[in-house]
Length: 131
Image 1: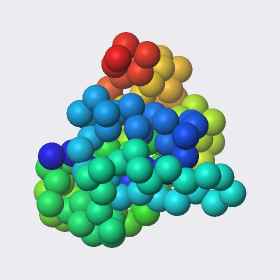
Image 2: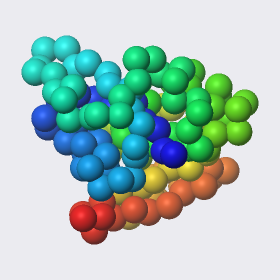
Image 3: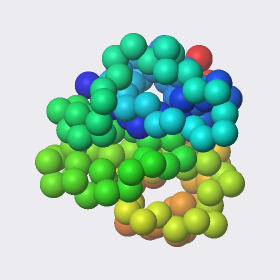
Image 4: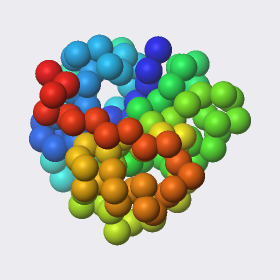
């Protein structure tokens, strides 16, 4: 089972998470409210009330940010693999915690993160080809 902390908006990261959820890539979520925008909790049916409830998953997939950075080292202690798909506009921000795998949505992201985190496994995932 793949878990995630997702944003509850109908645009950007919320929409990306929704598509991964609807296509069965992630199947258990903690929904993070988005301040200043309409929230869409009804998109995610298998949601949990706390990020701690994601620790029974095999892996955790995050889009741009896990929102709760201490979930990465805690997951690692429990043998849960973490995957982060950072967005291009976040390339100048350092990761407070480095995931097990970085999923790069473009060749540019792949090169940037490979140079910045050479010891972390990188996979280029062309998002437009997922559906």
